[in-house]
Length: 394
Image (cartoon, rainbow, N blue to C red):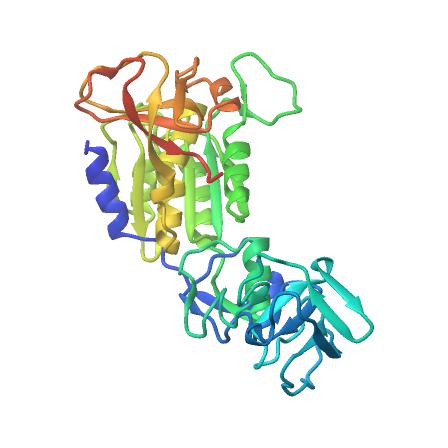
């Protein structure tokens, strides 16, 4: 049995290998950027007007004296008027500000008398209402870091810079194997001694949040059938998640069967509560997690280990997942194991929820984080500062 720190170090030594591909920007939302990106252009690409109004050289204007209006500029216009001292040009939002002009006055703060413009904005300063070239983004500037997950905002941002495609991480193939003689599917009649399969549902949903799909298998606690099912799953996946059968009971067969199939054990059992028997192994470039079968342990294994492991493998920064918060109620803990306690974080305050037992899922209805107590902790009192791991970024 190893410590949580040792387990984390081992996982960092065996990231899930990923291939990359270039895809159209329109298809990229939810994907993970595979490399740092720099801007190919300045944005804005030219000085432009932030208002409908009038552009002029600030040095040409004197309070109370009019400027002569000479033409107009619409957005998209390319033929720019030459400078005539003492003149202004009618301009519309987004239009190019001529090089000789440095200031725009909004039309609501002007008065026109024929061809003469009176500026009524007493607070107008040189450069007012002009969006400067490159004021958002400079050519060559890093605009996206490797590991960033694509969102609608990022897609729009890249499109505004003229980028039509990008390199992303290829989606890994994931398989989930649920073990146990007692498992039946939701919707079926529940016979004595049986329980509904919730682990495949929670893991499939958690994967979906990351933009991943999975194949789902079920196997009873019988060696030959389990070996056949695990062999089939390994033949098609990059990442295998197995629930149940990873402890040391007479019917906990997953680890020895995985070893028979060529999976090398990297660690088995972590000094933690819950999900102590957690397993991690490798087979070539494949990565395998064995999660204890209790539903609460499955989601603990996912949020505390598997999800951060995937983000780190993608190169995603995960610092935001860990933060400090003030605990609102007492949390008892016996030293020796790292504790992951389900909590509800609001702002910088976190409440420990009822239903911490590993067989229970009801706390996960509200929980959005774990409160983490290290293995040498003797617990936390209300008002103490504690570490929390967020389930998902807000």
